[in-house]
Length: 108
Image (cartoon, rainbow, N blue to C red; front, top):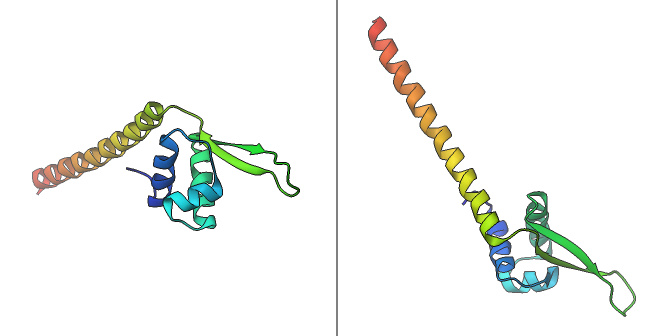
């Protein structure tokens, strides 16, 4: 799908429409914290997810909550365009090789 496995797993969880903390995502997708963090950061870099800080009454760090920043259809459209672009690129390479082979046969 053009995504790393962990990114895809976290994305699918976010597709369900929940606002989730890193710890909740860890439990649902059965990944360790660093793996979830890397996957979430990749989704944020793609502008598919966003983070908000939830201030709790307890002392300590605020809890980060992750949500989708785009609609599911918008994200899937972007993935589809990426896959189609890669596919077209590969077909173009094949066609260039084909024409190079034909040219070399003509010049022999």
